[in-house]
Image 1 (cartoon, rainbow, N blue to C red):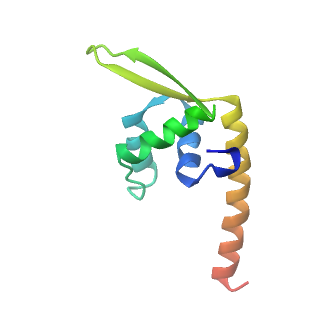
Image 2 (cartoon, rainbow, N blue to C red):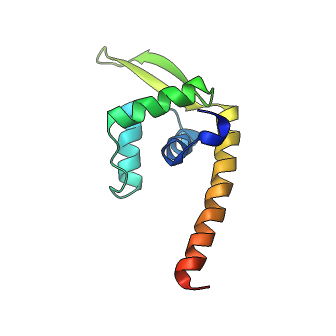
Length: 106
């Protein structure tokens, strides 16, 4: 996934990780909650996105053992990821503004 190829789903994941480090299920739950159940992502969708972001050095991952003895993989956005996210946010605002203008008949 090249810098220009960061799609909408990846942008949403980066936006969540900008706020704090999270593990996969946490990301799924947070997307669902914040979108008021519009984005109900499955693990089979999320993990390929996370792996692509990690490969492109937009996120890093670390493993930690929980109090229950389970190993979780936590993801955090990198400086490079923040720059890509800023670029994608600008593109989204431009796109959204244009669609709104068309729908409003402007």
